[in-house]
Length: 322
Ligand SMILES: C[S@@+](CC[C@H](N)C(=O)[O-])C[C@H]1O[C@@H](n2cnc3c(N)ncnc32)[C@H](O)[C@@H]1O
Image 1 (cartoon, protein in one colour):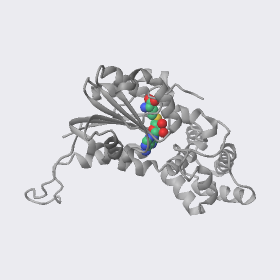
Image 2 (cartoon, rainbow, N blue to C red):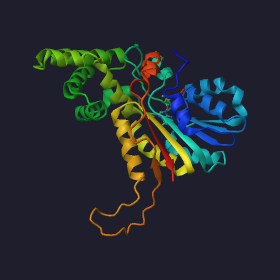
Image 3 (cartoon, rainbow, N blue to C red):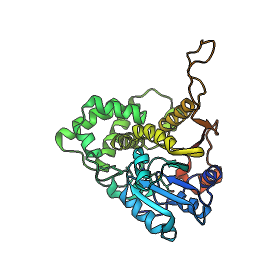
Image 4 (spheres, protein in one colour):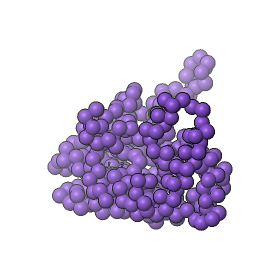
């Protein structure tokens, strides 16, 4: 189990957030507290930090790690979709900055009994909040073949979605699929059969070999189990609703499905007019909500990726509340 999650794009986040004494900041995905530690240091002596996570184990570690700052720290077990309600319990209505560092933490990935990774054998779980009723085991064993295909296609962009779903259905008819290794083996088998039949060039096959066959299926299931994309869309609105004018929203995403949601929602909220295209004068009275400050996402440097390969797919987008 890893207790050292290296905070991705840390310096870039701090450059945009500009934590200052007296400021109030929300780390809505506090994880092991990597970014929070620095927000608290930079906002010395009176900056406040509200940390949120769905994962009680992560919160316990963040709590231990951030003990030196406990007077300025409030930790909350919950979903960032409920950001407004969580802040209200602390009597806070507006904040200077919000950070969303999406996806899974190293703790979740590297703890075999959380079932997030095909690299470790463990129960097929994948719940960020272990109190949630539906785990990956439920989804894999109880979903219709069509539902499985949809999950693998939409959330994993998996080219062999149908074959994998068929193989899952055949396997679970003999015995329930309850472990990461069982599922990974089913996916690998589907891949090897398809790869043999595929007429794609050797070069393409070479390219495909770069990622493990289970990567996309595991990502898709994790997104489904934790409703990650729905939460993201709602969480962005919740974050914007608590920002002060001039307050800063930083979002780090790790795959194109997440980044697309952030990009589109930022663009929508940054509009100054929503009249139909040919309206001669503006009649919508629409108010611009955000100003996007990163036209293109900020990416990690080559040296950050070398030091922390998990940063390689990270993209940071930032907007300021108007
Ligand atoms: C990439 S990790 C954050 C790591 C953290 N920035 C650090 O440096 O230690 C993402 C965290 O977000 C949490 N998370 C994901 N979706 C969430 C949601 N909707 N509400 C609250 N926490 C969520 C996960 O449980 C995980 O601990």
